[in-house]
Amino acid sequence: MLDTEKEYIAVFGEDILDGLCLILWGWLRNIKMIVISSPMPSRITDIFKRTSFIRKYMKKSIKEHKRGLGNYKGLWYKVNEEVIDLTLRFYDWRLKHKSNLISYYNRVLTTDKFEAYIKRNLANQIFALLKYLHLARISNIKQNKILINRNPINEFVVGYFQDKYKIKYQIRWISSGWRAFALGAYYGWLFKQCIYRGIVFNKDRKEYKISKEAAWGFYQPTLRDDILIDNDKFKKSDILILNFNTEHSPRLEAFEEAKKRGFATASVEKLKININKNIFSILFFYLWVPVNVYFQLLLSRQLYLFYYIIMFHKGAFPVEILMNSYHIKCHISVITYDDIATTIILNKYRTKNVIFHWSDMTCYKGYGYAFIAHNIYFTWGNIHYDYHADYYFVDKKINTGCIFKREYNKTVENRERTIKRLPGFKEEKKTVIFFDSSFNNAFRFTEEFFLEYLEIIKEFCKKNKDVNVFLKPKSEMDKLRISQDNYSRYKKIWNELISCESFIYLNPIEWSVEQALSISDICINMGMNSPSTIALIFGKDALYYDNTGITSHPFAEKYMNKIVFEDKNRLFAQINNILNGSFSCKDVISEGEIREYDAFEDDEAMERLRSGLSELSTD
Image (tube, rainbow, N blue to C red; front, side):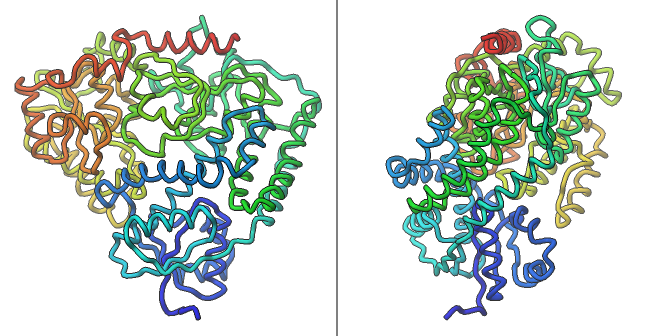
């Protein structure tokens, strides 16, 4: 007999159908649930927000315990590493030799990368489950009753977790029988896509050397959407600028700006379906293959994988429509953690999917950067690629060197012009620049960590009035999303900080990392993140403040309390050592280590990148 008086901790995975089943099951039985998450999965709440009776149930009977892995020191990193291990173990146990799914898709799509897609989705599911189970384990909720969908992945993870941490949960397994509904929903979506898009007949496929999504806009000197154009290897007419998501405001703004600048553009969500000789191949893959795979999985008792199949077809379809309308030699990805379906479909049309990286890729080891499948990866140096290479499905790595160095050197040559942009800058003083990072309570850098970092900057300003103190945030400070619980604290810290005489705010829309570093003596970074790594590559002194429990970054392993700090007083002491000349980062970090992060001493990275892309786009 189910005890409806007690609350269940509801465990949600990545499969949205499983999540819907949990909510509907609870509503039918009027079960009270606790969701240990920050926040509850939005895809589920969005579906139910127009259903008044379920919305009422969710408001009354489901409460959120807003905690994230980042609230517990080191836990976010631990879970990331666990995910890779469990993904590989589950794949080898249940799929490697017992499923025809991967070989079927590899054969149909003439690829060897569908394994990466399945592993990536398994990892996403396992991460979601481990997040809930760990938070339930260490939270102050006195509850061991778990509500979770029954499938082999969930059973595997729960079994591992209970054995590893010597915990015995009271599990209420919920059976999900909605896979046929998923198939019907997919065909409904496909029909809607065809009606929405419309058709054209035998449209000529325009040819471009390069395509890329509008992502960065045109205001930064290096990370800008026209960076490849040199009017030699690449002209404006060689590049097609794309938009994949009409609801993502920053990228939509960048796309509209590309239009104004006269680029060839295409909104992938709005492209018409080109009816040509290739249409039968498309119809086969998007009409016949899903239903065929559904029955294959049904017969082999692997329907728990069908959600991933549906999501693959939904992700692949817009790329297929794009490639059936354009002939593109090389596509530049701006997604460092996925993009597998895109790679597979591009390769079907003999198009390479490449990526060039723009940040420190050794920030942490974990599933976040695992199981990606680009064709070519242009990296600054060996370590950025080798750090994760055991779990990559990338065909080739090419070193270019750090892409920011050329612009930095130009800015150093024009330092006086840069300084004139800062009326409050005291040129006779030393300058310390602080960089923040992205933060989110479901992430390793939490809102609390961000506020603590702002407090540190404020304290440093008050203790060092003879130093120029910069803050260059990742996002404009007036556009930050701060929770209501912390908003008044944030405003108090910020108002006190901007009132400090030595403090100068560098608006990220107006200042690039190259410009900011060119007039700074020391760089301080919030977390093990890119700006300090870039500064070290430039030959500057740079330190990291990170109390999140990271141990896997090479600098955190080797240089704790030398260039990496968990304690603010030790950080302040080292800054003073650098300012008075008694310490330099070059005292501990060798030239060989820097070359691992930046393969070439020169500043020719963009030329190497253009040359590499030019070769790919002329094959």
